Image 1 (cartoon, rainbow, N blue to C red):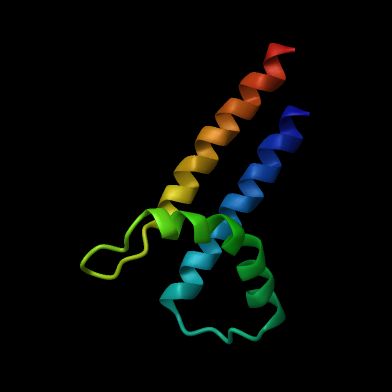
Image 2 (cartoon, rainbow, N blue to C red):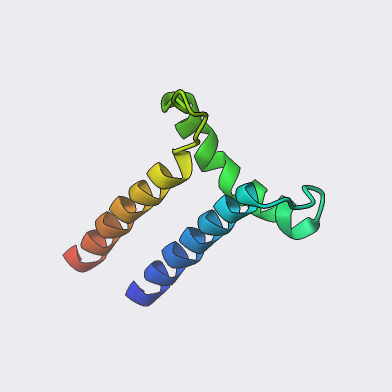
Length: 84
């Protein structure tokens, strides 16, 4: 069970990083893979964007904050798994 949880978190973390890379390069927003990645990440990124401003430079820190929150959630999930 531990390995499944860790793998699921790791896969989602990689998807978030790919989303960040897509924002740095020009990608076809209508490509099925790009749309799939956006659909997977946007539900968690959008609420963070509403709370955290982009700052004066227009830099979106929501993916970084999401990765930090995922790390916290992963640690809590591991603790819950080992508490039983």
